[in-house]
Length: 122
Image (cartoon, rainbow, N blue to C red; front, side, top):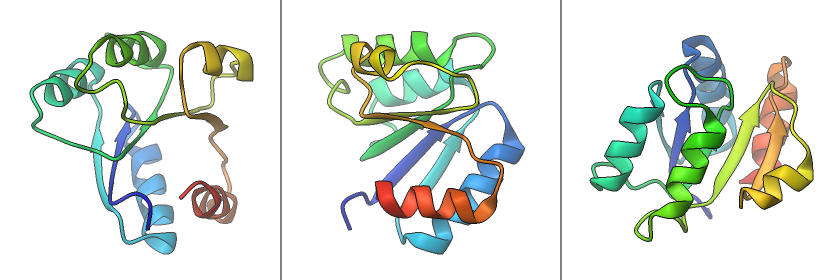
């Protein structure tokens, strides 16, 4: 298994629960969700959490996913953690590359579609 610790940063509790259930169906990786992007950034910087992979939503209050990704990429200690933008907000693949995201995935509404996406990514 490539990833052992997965962090999802998303302010939508229902989306996180949906994601966690799908993840548990395809992987044994440990899962954590944080709903506040500022708190997530601080925990990453302070090494309170050490994920192998981050799934990041774009539309969040306080700090957008784009802003958070930029902050992650500025810091030597966390900039190499792969980040997959996982959002309903449309962005172009070229913007994802410019932001140095590993990938961009549009959130599916179908549970089996999400499981298939996660199976392919992980």
